[in-house]
Length: 65
Image (tube, rainbow, N blue to C red; front, side, top):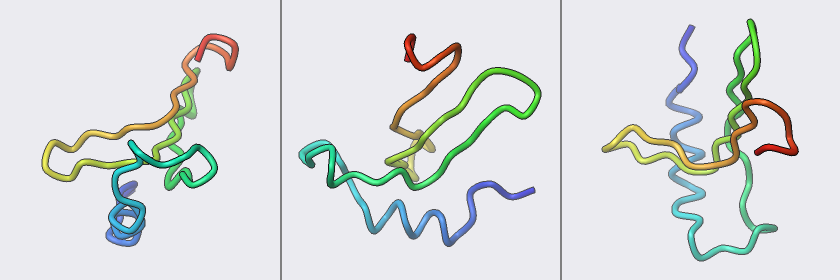
């Protein structure tokens, strides 16, 4: 299963860097989760060169994120 398709990468490119944007201007582009346990990742940025995501991660519970 391909999780990071060309379509998803294009959406990350369109949104660009979110560092100087207000929270209401930033969209979650992709949601990744562990189907066998804890862990949900909400990605708002993707660095193609380093293959790193930036966003919100919930590993235990939302109160610990």
